[in-house]
Image 1 (cartoon, rainbow, N blue to C red):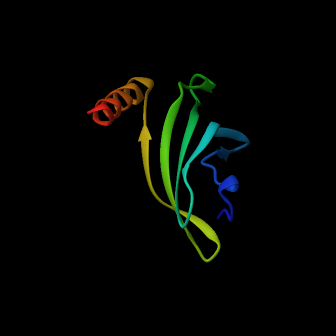
Image 2: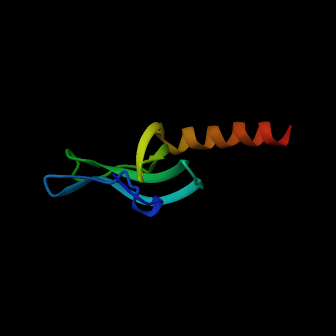
Length: 94
């Protein structure tokens, strides 16, 4: 497990192939409970290429000097991300 926020990642390698590649990472909150958002791509074995961008929000708890993932929410497409943004903007503007 990671000891610092900078060490946290969802990148995953299998059989020498990065099957989940992190493109970007943003820290939303820091502390004993930290929230990070990742932009990533998954490797498509059939096409032998990375798929479209996806997004994930992860919550981590730091206990005994290590961060452990406690929850996650995956945004599976740009269309879904845009819909979330649209709704949040509406709620914030009201």
